[in-house]
Length: 250
Image (cartoon, rainbow, N blue to C red; front, top):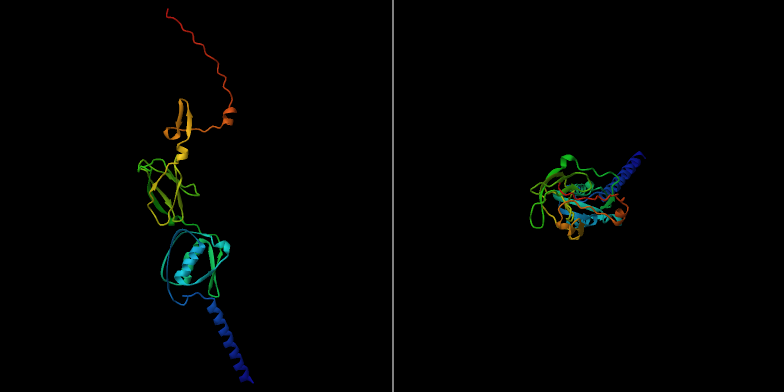
């Protein structure tokens, strides 16, 4: 009786172990057992769907995610892996961009992370330099260069040059009166030269000055815009006429 009980217990343990092993295999990633994969991704701006499709094409794994997540922005994505596991690839691509992943029956399920995306540290910033010119190739002095969404900014010097600390996820915004704003995503670049384009609508406005009318492009100095209501609501100055009498020399 004891021998029969012992044999039956061993059989149950083997069956349980086999069932658990099958479940673990279904929940594991391809390449998790040491097999390596090559992956090359290079995007400045794209979507989660495009990235997932590219990984599927290059590596052969399937993804699942909500329709609303398909257009999730993926910016400054540069991944070049040789012989990497799927786990390493997913961690490099999705984790830093606020996307969680888990494996369900060999399908990678992507969800929006509830954890805050870690901000780039100051140590990760590098100095970005460049020269700003107009359409004729002349250096522009006084162009404002800011990191979009922040108060960090500099102005170009007499040679049109600038230098500003920025990380790869930053977007530089170039602005100057009479010119269209210009944006550049930093990425891995440390040299960004820009050519500013005139805003024709602004430059061709007619401005009334004290000695006639001029186009704004031909005015040197500050221009103040006043609406008709502002002019009507200004108080009238009480100017007393001054009479001048000519006096003949004695």
